[in-house]
Image (cartoon, rainbow, N blue to C red; front, side, top):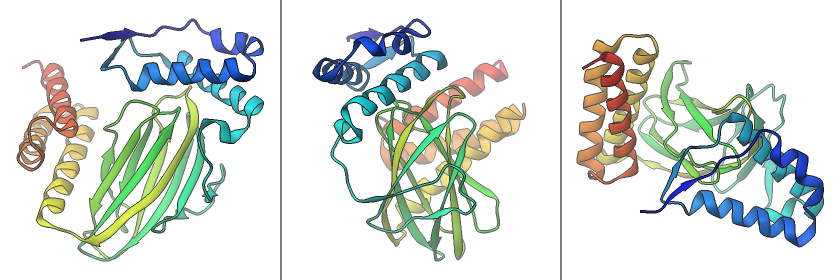
Length: 257
Protein backbone atom coordinates (compact mmCIF):
# COMPACT_ATOMS: atom_id res chain seq x y z
CA UNK A 1 0.00 0.00 0.00
CA UNK A 2 1.29 3.45 -0.92
CA UNK A 3 0.85 6.02 1.81
CA UNK A 4 0.99 9.66 0.77
CA UNK A 5 1.92 12.35 3.28
CA UNK A 6 1.30 15.88 2.09
CA UNK A 7 2.37 18.73 4.37
CA UNK A 8 2.46 22.44 3.61
CA UNK A 9 3.89 25.34 5.57
CA UNK A 10 1.41 28.14 6.31
CA UNK A 11 1.52 30.75 3.57
CA UNK A 12 3.57 28.57 1.22
CA UNK A 13 1.24 28.75 -1.75
CA UNK A 14 0.12 32.34 -1.29
CA UNK A 15 3.72 33.57 -1.07
CA UNK A 16 4.83 31.67 -4.16
CA UNK A 17 1.86 32.15 -6.51
CA UNK A 18 3.64 34.98 -8.30
CA UNK A 19 6.36 32.55 -9.42
CA UNK A 20 3.91 30.16 -11.08
CA UNK A 21 2.82 31.22 -14.54
CA UNK A 22 1.09 29.79 -17.60
CA UNK A 23 1.62 26.15 -18.44
CA UNK A 24 3.87 25.50 -15.46
CA UNK A 25 1.09 26.56 -13.10
CA UNK A 26 -1.41 24.35 -14.90
CA UNK A 27 0.90 21.33 -14.71
CA UNK A 28 1.73 21.97 -11.07
CA UNK A 29 -1.92 22.25 -10.05
CA UNK A 30 -2.88 19.13 -12.03
CA UNK A 31 -0.15 17.10 -10.32
CA UNK A 32 -1.17 18.44 -6.93
CA UNK A 33 -4.84 17.54 -7.45
CA UNK A 34 -3.82 14.08 -8.66
CA UNK A 35 -1.82 13.50 -5.48
CA UNK A 36 -5.05 13.88 -3.49
CA UNK A 37 -7.48 12.02 -5.73
CA UNK A 38 -5.23 9.08 -6.65
CA UNK A 39 -3.68 8.29 -3.28
CA UNK A 40 -5.10 5.07 -1.79
CA UNK A 41 -4.82 6.68 1.61
CA UNK A 42 -3.89 10.18 2.66
CA UNK A 43 -2.09 10.29 5.99
CA UNK A 44 -1.40 13.56 7.75
CA UNK A 45 -4.23 15.44 6.08
CA UNK A 46 -3.85 19.11 5.33
CA UNK A 47 -4.83 21.34 8.20
CA UNK A 48 -7.17 24.31 7.80
CA UNK A 49 -4.31 26.71 7.00
CA UNK A 50 -3.04 24.36 4.31
CA UNK A 51 -6.52 24.07 2.82
CA UNK A 52 -6.82 27.84 2.76
CA UNK A 53 -3.49 28.15 0.95
CA UNK A 54 -4.46 25.43 -1.52
CA UNK A 55 -7.69 27.27 -2.32
CA UNK A 56 -5.76 30.52 -2.69
CA UNK A 57 -3.55 28.84 -5.29
CA UNK A 58 -6.63 27.58 -7.12
CA UNK A 59 -8.11 31.08 -7.21
CA UNK A 60 -4.80 32.50 -8.48
CA UNK A 61 -4.70 29.87 -11.20
CA UNK A 62 -8.22 30.79 -12.29
CA UNK A 63 -7.31 34.48 -12.44
CA UNK A 64 -4.30 33.73 -14.68
CA UNK A 65 -5.61 30.97 -16.91
CA UNK A 66 -9.36 31.69 -16.80
CA UNK A 67 -12.24 30.00 -15.01
CA UNK A 68 -12.59 27.29 -17.65
CA UNK A 69 -9.01 26.06 -17.21
CA UNK A 70 -9.97 23.60 -14.47
CA UNK A 71 -12.62 21.92 -16.58
CA UNK A 72 -15.18 22.46 -19.32
CA UNK A 73 -17.86 25.00 -18.57
CA UNK A 74 -21.54 24.06 -18.66
CA UNK A 75 -24.67 26.13 -18.67
CA UNK A 76 -25.71 26.57 -15.06
CA UNK A 77 -27.07 28.95 -12.46
CA UNK A 78 -24.90 30.66 -9.86
CA UNK A 79 -26.00 30.79 -6.24
CA UNK A 80 -25.46 34.21 -4.66
CA UNK A 81 -23.42 34.57 -1.49
CA UNK A 82 -26.11 36.56 0.34
CA UNK A 83 -29.14 34.61 -0.86
CA UNK A 84 -32.37 35.52 0.94
CA UNK A 85 -34.34 32.53 -0.38
CA UNK A 86 -33.24 28.95 -1.10
CA UNK A 87 -32.31 28.22 -4.72
CA UNK A 88 -34.72 25.69 -6.21
CA UNK A 89 -33.11 22.52 -7.57
CA UNK A 90 -34.63 21.13 -10.76
CA UNK A 91 -33.86 17.96 -12.68
CA UNK A 92 -31.15 18.36 -15.30
CA UNK A 93 -30.04 21.79 -14.10
CA UNK A 94 -26.67 22.58 -12.53
CA UNK A 95 -26.18 25.21 -9.86
CA UNK A 96 -22.68 26.45 -9.09
CA UNK A 97 -21.65 27.92 -5.77
CA UNK A 98 -18.62 29.42 -4.08
CA UNK A 99 -18.39 28.97 -0.33
CA UNK A 100 -16.04 29.60 2.57
CA UNK A 101 -15.99 28.83 6.27
CA UNK A 102 -18.92 30.23 8.24
CA UNK A 103 -21.21 30.41 5.21
CA UNK A 104 -24.38 28.39 4.64
CA UNK A 105 -26.09 28.15 1.27
CA UNK A 106 -29.61 26.76 0.94
CA UNK A 107 -31.40 24.80 -1.74
CA UNK A 108 -35.00 23.66 -2.05
CA UNK A 109 -36.41 20.43 -3.50
CA UNK A 110 -40.18 20.09 -3.88
CA UNK A 111 -41.35 16.51 -3.35
CA UNK A 112 -44.43 14.41 -2.72
CA UNK A 113 -44.71 11.75 -0.04
CA UNK A 114 -42.90 8.56 -1.02
CA UNK A 115 -40.65 10.12 -3.65
CA UNK A 116 -36.93 9.39 -3.72
CA UNK A 117 -34.52 12.24 -4.49
CA UNK A 118 -30.86 11.95 -5.45
CA UNK A 119 -28.56 14.98 -5.28
CA UNK A 120 -24.97 15.19 -6.53
CA UNK A 121 -22.54 17.69 -5.01
CA UNK A 122 -19.26 17.93 -6.92
CA UNK A 123 -16.70 19.40 -4.52
CA UNK A 124 -14.07 21.61 -6.15
CA UNK A 125 -11.38 22.35 -3.61
CA UNK A 126 -13.56 22.39 -0.50
CA UNK A 127 -15.07 19.67 1.70
CA UNK A 128 -18.73 20.49 2.26
CA UNK A 129 -21.39 19.08 4.59
CA UNK A 130 -25.04 18.77 3.56
CA UNK A 131 -27.92 18.92 6.05
CA UNK A 132 -31.45 17.99 5.03
CA UNK A 133 -34.53 19.54 6.65
CA UNK A 134 -38.14 18.40 6.27
CA UNK A 135 -41.00 20.76 5.32
CA UNK A 136 -41.75 21.21 9.05
CA UNK A 137 -38.21 22.50 9.63
CA UNK A 138 -36.87 19.46 11.50
CA UNK A 139 -33.47 18.06 10.57
CA UNK A 140 -33.78 14.73 8.77
CA UNK A 141 -30.23 13.69 7.89
CA UNK A 142 -26.67 14.88 7.46
CA UNK A 143 -24.44 13.81 4.56
CA UNK A 144 -20.65 13.94 4.81
CA UNK A 145 -19.35 10.64 3.49
CA UNK A 146 -16.74 11.98 1.03
CA UNK A 147 -13.84 13.80 2.72
CA UNK A 148 -11.71 14.37 -0.41
CA UNK A 149 -12.28 17.99 -1.51
CA UNK A 150 -12.21 17.17 -5.23
CA UNK A 151 -14.70 14.30 -5.24
CA UNK A 152 -18.47 13.87 -5.47
CA UNK A 153 -20.72 13.85 -2.41
CA UNK A 154 -24.16 12.22 -2.65
CA UNK A 155 -27.31 13.13 -0.74
CA UNK A 156 -30.12 10.62 -1.24
CA UNK A 157 -33.35 10.53 0.74
CA UNK A 158 -37.06 9.68 0.73
CA UNK A 159 -39.79 12.28 1.29
CA UNK A 160 -41.89 11.40 4.33
CA UNK A 161 -44.36 14.24 3.67
CA UNK A 162 -45.43 16.55 0.85
CA UNK A 163 -43.65 19.88 0.62
CA UNK A 164 -40.39 21.75 0.22
CA UNK A 165 -37.26 20.02 1.55
CA UNK A 166 -34.30 22.26 2.37
CA UNK A 167 -30.71 21.17 1.77
CA UNK A 168 -28.10 23.35 3.48
CA UNK A 169 -24.48 23.37 2.27
CA UNK A 170 -21.69 24.45 4.62
CA UNK A 171 -17.90 24.30 4.50
CA UNK A 172 -16.58 21.67 6.90
CA UNK A 173 -13.52 23.72 7.89
CA UNK A 174 -13.65 27.34 9.03
CA UNK A 175 -10.64 28.51 7.01
CA UNK A 176 -11.40 26.52 3.85
CA UNK A 177 -12.92 28.04 0.72
CA UNK A 178 -13.74 26.71 -2.71
CA UNK A 179 -16.41 25.98 -5.26
CA UNK A 180 -18.96 23.25 -5.75
CA UNK A 181 -21.52 22.17 -8.31
CA UNK A 182 -24.88 20.79 -7.18
CA UNK A 183 -27.62 19.15 -9.22
CA UNK A 184 -30.75 17.12 -8.68
CA UNK A 185 -30.01 13.88 -10.52
CA UNK A 186 -33.10 11.79 -9.86
CA UNK A 187 -36.69 11.97 -8.59
CA UNK A 188 -38.81 8.81 -8.66
CA UNK A 189 -40.97 6.53 -6.57
CA UNK A 190 -38.96 5.17 -3.63
CA UNK A 191 -38.17 1.46 -3.39
CA UNK A 192 -37.81 -0.61 -0.24
CA UNK A 193 -34.04 -0.35 -0.63
CA UNK A 194 -34.28 3.46 -0.77
CA UNK A 195 -36.41 3.58 2.36
CA UNK A 196 -34.02 1.41 4.35
CA UNK A 197 -30.98 3.50 3.40
CA UNK A 198 -32.93 6.66 4.23
CA UNK A 199 -33.62 5.16 7.65
CA UNK A 200 -29.91 4.37 8.11
CA UNK A 201 -28.96 7.99 7.34
CA UNK A 202 -31.67 9.26 9.68
CA UNK A 203 -30.50 7.02 12.54
CA UNK A 204 -26.86 7.93 11.93
CA UNK A 205 -27.71 11.64 12.12
CA UNK A 206 -29.70 11.19 15.33
CA UNK A 207 -26.83 9.22 16.83
CA UNK A 208 -24.29 11.91 15.88
CA UNK A 209 -26.43 14.63 17.45
CA UNK A 210 -26.64 12.63 20.68
CA UNK A 211 -22.87 12.10 20.66
CA UNK A 212 -22.29 15.84 20.29
CA UNK A 213 -24.58 16.34 23.29
CA UNK A 214 -22.55 13.80 25.30
CA UNK A 215 -25.40 11.27 25.44
CA UNK A 216 -23.41 8.20 24.41
CA UNK A 217 -25.73 5.58 25.91
CA UNK A 218 -28.70 6.65 23.78
CA UNK A 219 -26.52 7.18 20.71
CA UNK A 220 -25.06 3.66 20.67
CA UNK A 221 -28.15 1.60 19.71
CA UNK A 222 -29.00 4.06 16.93
CA UNK A 223 -25.49 3.82 15.47
CA UNK A 224 -25.57 0.03 15.68
CA UNK A 225 -28.94 -0.15 13.93
CA UNK A 226 -27.77 2.21 11.17
CA UNK A 227 -24.72 0.01 10.58
CA UNK A 228 -26.83 -3.15 10.56
CA UNK A 229 -29.14 -1.74 7.87
CA UNK A 230 -26.31 -0.41 5.71
CA UNK A 231 -24.33 -3.66 5.81
CA UNK A 232 -27.38 -5.66 4.77
CA UNK A 233 -28.35 -3.30 1.94
CA UNK A 234 -24.91 -2.31 0.63
CA UNK A 235 -22.52 -5.06 1.68
CA UNK A 236 -19.56 -4.88 4.09
CA UNK A 237 -17.16 -3.21 1.63
CA UNK A 238 -19.28 -0.17 0.74
CA UNK A 239 -17.75 3.25 1.65
CA UNK A 240 -20.85 4.27 3.61
CA UNK A 241 -20.53 1.13 5.74
CA UNK A 242 -16.91 2.12 6.40
CA UNK A 243 -18.09 5.58 7.43
CA UNK A 244 -20.58 4.08 9.89
CA UNK A 245 -17.96 1.71 11.31
CA UNK A 246 -15.68 4.68 11.91
CA UNK A 247 -18.50 6.59 13.63
CA UNK A 248 -19.29 3.58 15.81
CA UNK A 249 -15.63 3.18 16.76
CA UNK A 250 -15.38 6.83 17.78
CA UNK A 251 -18.56 6.47 19.81
CA UNK A 252 -17.11 3.52 21.74
CA UNK A 253 -13.88 5.48 22.24
CA UNK A 254 -15.75 8.46 23.68
CA UNK A 255 -17.94 6.18 25.77
CA UNK A 256 -14.89 4.37 27.13
CA UNK A 257 -16.07 0.88 26.18
